[in-house]
Image (tube, rainbow, N blue to C red; front, side):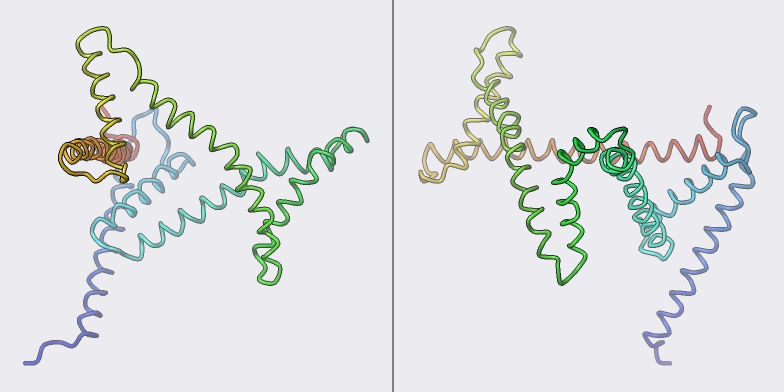
Length: 258
């Protein structure tokens, strides 16, 4: 007997996936109906209770991607992006447009206040309008002027901050006197050796051979330690998010918090 064709296998796979998704949805609804919160907890039909159910369902749908991509995950992903954009638009209105543009210009208490608002806000408003021309194919080139000013202004403000934070602050501990206890001296030596060897590793005007090769190899070790610590910090941050979601599902949704 000939094996089933590819379209038949795809159809069977879709049927199985649909059955699994329906089963998971029914299991979630059953869990929501059977869950019992404490007397002081929210009611199931209250806004807070429905919000907990929705949040728990979306959390489980997002983590369903660990199994494989599915339509429910795509729905939750698009919903997350849409809600984020909507929230950002509302916050932009209430935190930026309304207090900085509408209120000073439309609801100015006096003529002097209106003239002062026009003097200080005309250029930013024009720059914002130029940014909106990016939506037009014909007039999108006008937005380049606003982007140029924003990039230049941001670079002028950001470069001194970066130099002070990532260069001068880093040089301070490496040139401080070696004193204090044993661990203070060991830490100061580690910072000094690490700084010098890493900088020498990126110094390509001298060929790295002989003693220079050993120094650059030590710099590689320090770089690997730094990359490993950064990666570990990222992993622990993701694990912390997972712990928070599991705590929400067990405590707030299922009511199993002791």
